[in-house]
Length: 219
Image 1 (cartoon, rainbow, N blue to C red):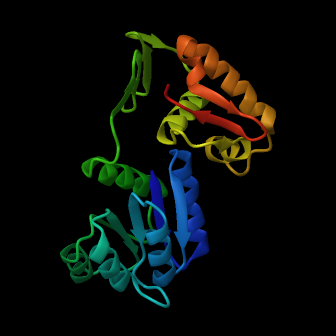
Image 2: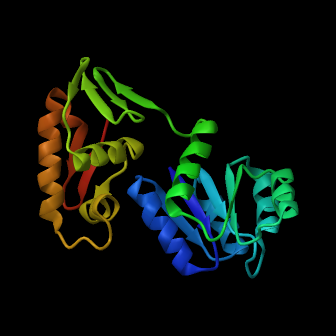
């Protein structure tokens, strides 16, 4: 999932980014409306988190421009708490409205709920005899459940969300373990080795990209 976070406060953008990347989402940033429109047109964005009060172009104007070209889900994230502001936002076509200060965990849950309502998130993934139940965090092969560590599960689901994309070891470290993790590439390689072992006959779905990292590729 590609999420565009639009807010002129870098600390807020970083906070949201950390939580969403932990859920294996790809986050793009913009500090004002004009930049947001540029990024939106360049990337295939699945959902926009949009502040209202911003320089250059405010959230309402940004939303108008987005709605001219797309029905991509939008969540307003703003300090404006008056009912009239909320009603105006919903009249303009937002999918949800969150007021500051906010809980990043609640915002993450709302992002996932909006994506699910709009058919962006699938509850299951299936490839031949391999099946992943995202809601139940369960992986089965030919009907038999296999045991994965939490990190192995996160790696597998991140691969599935990014099929056919070459992912660097550094990217996997940042997304799965976080930016403040002090491990190295060997941490990734060790967990990939364990995951491949757990996948058994489907181990070859995870390809090694020489000199870079790994790629999940359905045969």
